[in-house]
Image 1 (cartoon, rainbow, N blue to C red):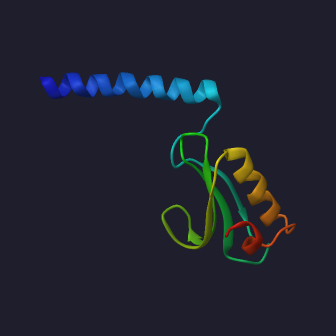
Image 2: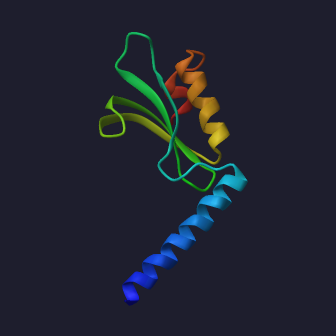
Length: 102
């Protein structure tokens, strides 16, 4: 019985967390907020994955993200917006990945 009550409380807390994230405009942990090919003829992609607390990680990956992939470069950003701007700059060819993801 106690486990059922704790699971119920966990569901309540999760609902509160989800509502707060929505109010703050934040993505859930692990949510992919951006994904574009690095180039039109390349198997690599630029992805942005939210941390759930307003930050995000930009990665250059190869393979079937998020299931089976190889990460080539990665960098954590303090905000999702900054991460998406960096990823867009890379995928649009304005900036080399090495210049942004150090």
